[in-house]
Structure formats: structure tokens, C-alpha cells
Image (tube, rainbow, N blue to C red; front, side):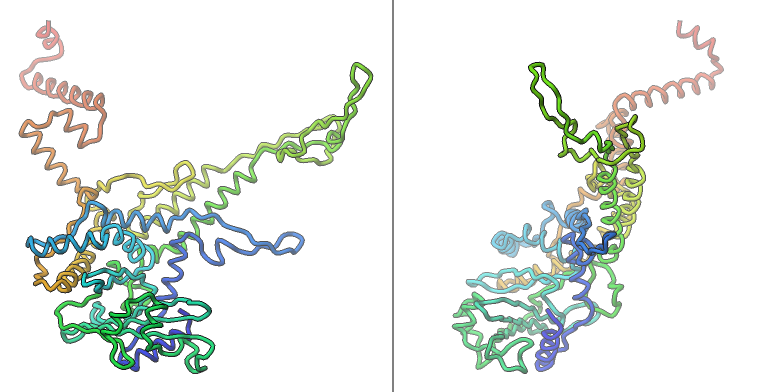
Length: 503
């Protein structure tokens, strides 16, 4: 949304007694979206001037690390093995039907990737369609907060802009929750040739339900039901707000007074740019470091070769299409060819890339060893987070605590919209704990199985200490030999006596 429309949004909100929050956060989200897509304006495409003073457009390569971080973070936070349910069968049956009808898990995973991983904000709105509760997932940059208190969001306005024919249209949806009432108010604007100059920023108000339904593909019957004069308002008395503000469990350090969240990649911007810069330089190193064969220009001339029958053929000694050949006059005719094989700085570039990746991993809460460059690709170092109280372990738990509350709010709204009684303490959000494994808990479990005879020494060493079968046998033999020597020493049996006993 441009600044003129933001001013119009502020004016319209104030007319309703609302104070829309417009700070620098939407600019931050726009920049983070570029990080997420892997192409930053003015950085990945940039201008250079050659030695002749001519300006060209150059391109930096992208590792797409922003997208990778968002994907990995989402899979660790809430994946296909996570689930949401209600403890009572009646409510749970309805909830599971709503979840299936809304294709919830697949859509929510993608929504979480953008709201937590990329933009730092997102909104889930519960609405009715054909008498059934539906969920609308809204990107954070399409919503503005109008009311908040103590970290909680109580009002938002959602913006939907579209073109229809040659005319621009805007749909504003105000969601407010106050004093036990949830209210939704729609406003529609048309910005065409006949729009008064004073309204050019957002357009003239629309009240014709026929045209509104046609432009925005909305149900005309529903519009007629909520239209009162020039207003489109729907409200319900409830204990639950029908929208949820999803944001990561990170304090917004860009503006500590802002009610908006920040994404997990937001504070790794400079590192991501540095990574792509070094990665591009490493690829250019390969390109510039190709072997070159410098050929004396005299050898590139065509030669007449006589045949045995007296005829002649004109041939080229070198293929001019081969890029490794470079024609230039050499100092000596006795040395018509010189071969240049530069030394590639592959190790130095890989080391630099991995240092930056370690910093990125630490900055986004994954720890210093989560990402590495392998075979020219960015790869995670493990498929499991098997670290006792690691940075990643603590970080995921922190975000799951807040995400659980946000999902609880969403489930409560869905059940309330289904005219069912809701008890928040019966709503369960179950995360996939198999991804995050506590080493201490695993050790105690393995010890219990060993004590009960459910696991051999060899199996215990192989599983808990990560040894191969041969290594485990070697450890067991070494321990048994040491114990035997200690026991013999206790009874005064020396090495010679031990040999006699063995005979």
C-alpha cells in the first residue's frame, strides 16, 4: 500500500473511532519478503561501470537461504506429525470436520512459513460460508492493527486491492473485539475516472451490492443480509474474538513500542546479503579460474596443406569456438603456446561461506552448526535436533509456547462459531516431540532398558554413544580386560601367575 492510501486508511479508521497503527513495520515486511524470495532489489540486480565508462546490469547469485530458513523453522515448529484436538468427543468431532473441510494442516504450514519465517506477522480470520465456519489466512502485509493492549491484538483492518477492467478497487474489512462483542465491518471503494479528486487516494465508497459481489466475487445474499443503509456490518456477542494475530515469540527490536512482530530472518539481513555476495564470488572464481591456452596469433592463421595427389587443403590448427584458447602475440616464436592453470581458492571460499552460515544459524536461533555448504549447496547438518538444551532446542520450545496459545484462540473461535461450548483448558495442541530429543531423557530411557535386560551392552553403546558394532565390541573387550586386571591385582595375581592359571 502506498503512502497516499495509508493516509486514507488512517482517515477512514479515525472516522470509526479507531487508531490504525502505521509504523515502519510494513516497510520491514516488504524487505523481508525480498529476503524470502531470494532477490533483493538493488542488491541482486545492480549496476556496474566497465573500463570504457559504459553502465551494465549485473546479477548476484542467491543461495535462497531465507526461504530455506523459513521452511526448516516451520518443519521444526509445526509439521505433519503435529495435531490439534479437543478433549470432549462432541466438540472434537466437529473440530476435526472443520479441520478437514478447511484443509487446515497443509494451509496452516504454508501460512506459518510466511507469518513466522518471512514477514513476522499473519492473521487467521474465522468466517461463515454456507453456514460452515471457514478460516481465512491473511499475510501480515495485508493487515493493519487498529487496537492492541499489553501485547494482545483486539482490532485489525484487512486490505484487499484488485483491478477489474480498467478500474482499481479496494475492500477494507475491519475486525474489532471489545466488551464481549465481535464486529466485522466491510467498506468498498472504487477508484475510476469519475472519482472525485479528494478521494483519489483510495476511491469513492461503493454501496451497490450487485456490483460489489461482481467485482470482489462475494455472495450477494450475504451482503444484502448485513447491509444497513450504506454500511455492511455483522456482529455477534461472544467471549472469543474471531481473528488471531500470529507472530513469532521475538521482541520487535526495530521498534520496541510496536504491536507488530518480526520474522526470524529479520535480524539476519546483512548476513544473508554477505552470504550471497561471497557465494557469487566463489562461482566467479571458478569461471575466472578456468585453464587458458595462450596461442601465438601466427598459429591461428589458416594453412595450406598439400595432398599426395598434388591438391591442397586449407585448414585451421585451432577451433575458434573453444573458449579456452586466447590469441595474443607472444614474445618468442620458439614458444608458440603457453598454458595457464590458476590455483582456485576453493578452500578459502568454503571456509568463508561456512563461517557466515554459522553466524546466520546462530542469529535465527538454530545454533552455530545447523547449516553448512556441501557440494555447492546449503545443507542442514542433521535430520534431528538431538541436543540437550541446545540453542535450537530452547528456541523451538519458546516459539511453541506462544504458537500453542495462538492456535488455542483459533480453535476456541471455530467451536464458538459452531455454537458449541468452549473450555480453553480442554483444547490441546500437540507438537511433534520426536524432532526434539533430550539427551538426558534418552540416556535414562536406554539405562532402564539395559537394566531390565531389554538391551545388550553392545546395543547400548551403539545407540547412545553412536559407535559401530566393531567399535562397540572393542570397547567391551577393553573394559572386560581392564576389569580382569584390576581383579587379579586385588588378589595378588601377577601377569606370570595369570599366564599359569590360563594354562
